[in-house]
Image (cartoon, rainbow, N blue to C red; front, side):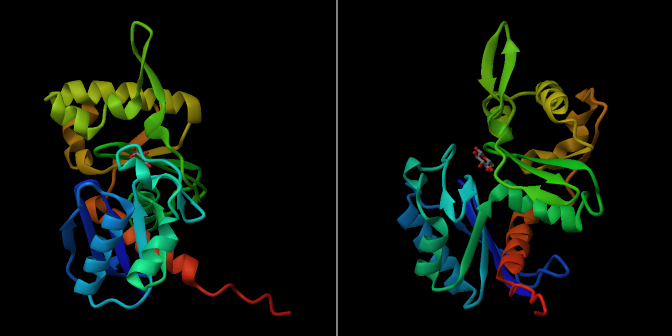
Length: 258
Ligand code: BGC
């Protein structure tokens, strides 16, 4: 099935037409700057512009950096606070005139990695983390997604009983802003991973998002007993995974034969 996959981020709105069976792009990838302030109306108008550039009239799958429950946003950590309680699916479907399915951006990236990347055929508990402005998480149990986990918001005891939200401690944004060396960043991220390992005992960690292309530079700091690998689909994961999700949602329900 061909679906327009879109990844909405704090700096850019990216999209491409995806063959959801092969997990490949069948068009070029286009990107438009995220408007500022990134209010619901402004982002929806930019999405419409992207859809028009593709002359697209079919189904859209869209990753969004918030928890999305039944099409409605319930959080807004790194986006405009007016998104909270916005019916995102309805807003995007009405603005673009194309049926749009929306899911959390890390869940979208995880769906792609599980189907086409490092998580392919993996059983047990797989935890994908996307390291960018924030930290996103996607948790799979025997290949099934437990949607809307927000493990980037876990409190970590970082120093002297001072607690910090994980994404304020070891995201890509923190690394860049504090100009951390890769080894320092790796040590911080290790602390976070050790906490996740203790709480969830996953079988595999997959690291995606902006920082993951430098996996080899910071992973030597990891002291874990859980397997850990970098994502294979890198910056296309969000687009491809969103399209795959929309393909699953838009398939007609199977008849029971009765
Ligand atoms: C948000 C998540 C999102 C992640 C990555 C976090 O701040 O709370 O919903 O998946 O950033 O964009």
